[in-house]
Image (cartoon, rainbow, N blue to C red; front, side, top):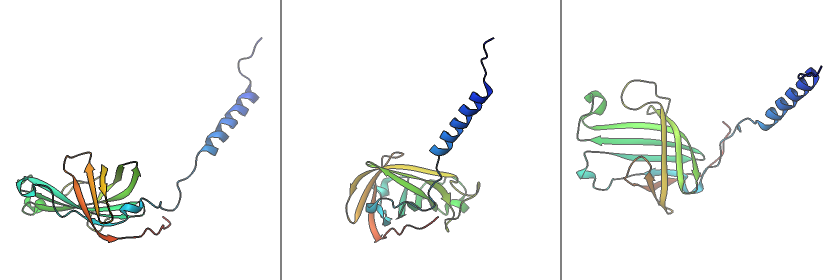
Length: 172
């Protein structure tokens, strides 16, 4: 009678597959990555095109340090979408932090909405919480200026360099 199942061969094959799977896995490094040199620093968006004609808009202040980003989003609205305790007469601030990655001309920011001290924001309360995921095309860059075109909007984000920051890679 022909046997379809040979226990020693099966165990040898299973152990081989397990070893192969374990050898191909690796832990994430326990230090941050260097990031892109041209964005390292603090950047400020002073205005938006046709700002006075818009019903609502946001201005961004970014800080890039190694592979991390921090953003302060100052929003203005002439229309009251919610409670005035949150919107404070049409002006409010939101914060996010996380890591970024640049591939070709695309800058991908992936993080979470935070409190003003950049501690993680809990569900509920005013405004957005949870994941912050933005992608920008870097359309122009110079020593003191950066123009980002967001995938989620048609309005360019024109930033000016406030302070250059050198990346000092730190352990996590």
